[in-house]
Image 1: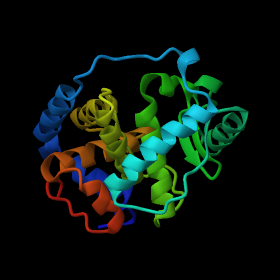
Image 2: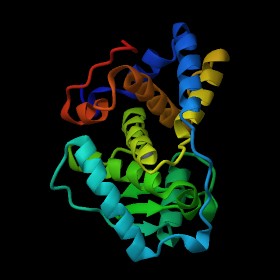
Image 3: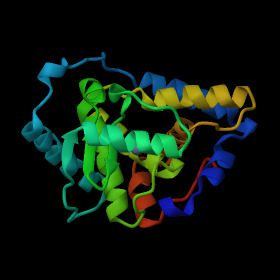
Length: 232
Ligand SMILES: [Zn+2]
C-alpha cells in the first residue's frame, strides 16, 4: 500500500473500532512512557535567524532523506510564517467554513512557497517541526502531490517528526495527544468531526503499526510496500 491508497474513511474504520479500545489505551501509555525528556522552551529571541533556519533544515533533511530512503530531493524554502501565510491560512479557513485565525494561531505548514514555521512551535521543538513539514515536501515530490492534511499524509509526517525529535532528545507530545483525542472519541462513540481529528487518526494509526513493525513503515508508505499488520 502507498500513502495514496488509504483514504481517511478506511483509516478511520480500521482505528475507530470499539474492539481497539484496549489497544488504544496501551499505545497511549506507551507513547506517554516515551516522553522522557524535560520540556525545554527556547526563548523566541534565541531562535535561529533565516540563515540559521536554513542550516537546521539542511541537517534535518539529510537525516530524513536517509530515514525515508529518498535522494536528490531539492530543499524547499524555509521561513518563519509571515503576513502571506496569515492571508492564505485565513482564506482556506473561510473556504472550509472554519473560524478566522489570529497571527499566532497560524500553525507551521507546507505550501508551494516552501516550509512556513510558526515561531511558537519552533520554540518548543524546531527540528521536529521542520522534519514534519519537510516530510510533506518529500510526499509531494514523490507522488502524493500537494494534498492538504489527509490522515495518512499527516500520520506519515508525525512519524518522521517523532523520529527526528527522538534523535535530538526532544519529547514530542503530538502522538500522546493524538491517543488522548482518539480515546475520547471512541469512548463517546463519536465520529471524527474536525480537521485536527484527521491528524490525530493518522498519527495514532501509524504509531500502532510502528510499534509492531518498526520505523521502516514510513519508507514503505512511500514506496508502496506498506501493509497493515495490527489494524487489518
Ligand atoms: Zn502536517
